[in-house]
Image (cartoon, rainbow, N blue to C red; front, side, top):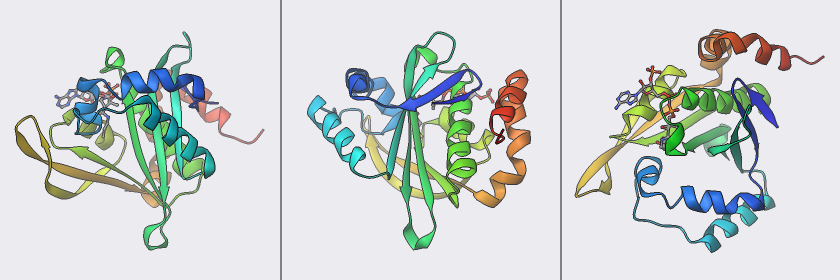
Length: 200
Ligand SMILES: CC(C)(COP(=O)(O)OP(=O)(O)OC[C@H]1O[C@@H](n2cnc3c(N)ncnc32)[C@H](O)[C@@H]1OP(=O)(O)O)[C@@H](O)C(=O)NCCC(=O)NCCS
């Protein structure tokens, strides 16, 4: 379990497959998350992916829970890649629509950065996001990601093409900015979190 501010990240378990199936077939959620909302996923594929993930440590999917109520709110994923010998975490997340716009996306992104850099010693993190997903772009930029290249007209959704944007942040950019970012995102819960990230 990894607790940070109002949320807890824990491994996705077999019993969560119903929830993952519901979220990953929610048209309005996948419109933003995958840019392929019509590309529905049968339960069997979700279970296959879960089984594949158990065979190695490359794709880590966490269930996001609200610490106080224990409610499951969404998932967050780090896919570890090593193209060009640079250890990179490709991050992604989605939240049930009921929880959007409450500041949780920023906390989740911070959690993924902490796991990637402070715990896993990765060299960089990256994320892809479709052109119209302004909410996600704001969250990524607030957490220190920079918008880099554009995959032009790389998606066709709702009758037209859209660009994909690429965002990234380097370890050497994150580490010096870490404490300030934690304080600005977690507010009064920052000291509690920072204390848990020191070896006793
Ligand atoms: C993306 C997602 C994880 C963000 O989580 P969230 O809890 O809604 O985000 P937050 O509340 O932390 O922050 C949202 C920010 O976007 C801003 N925002 C919201 N709508 C916006 C818009 N249309 N244009 C610009 N900014 C917008 C908010 O004002 C807020 O910024 P602020 O805190 O500086 O004011 C969540 O909305 C989600 O699951 N979306 C669907 C799946 C998805 O898009 N996944 C990411 C794929 S890259």
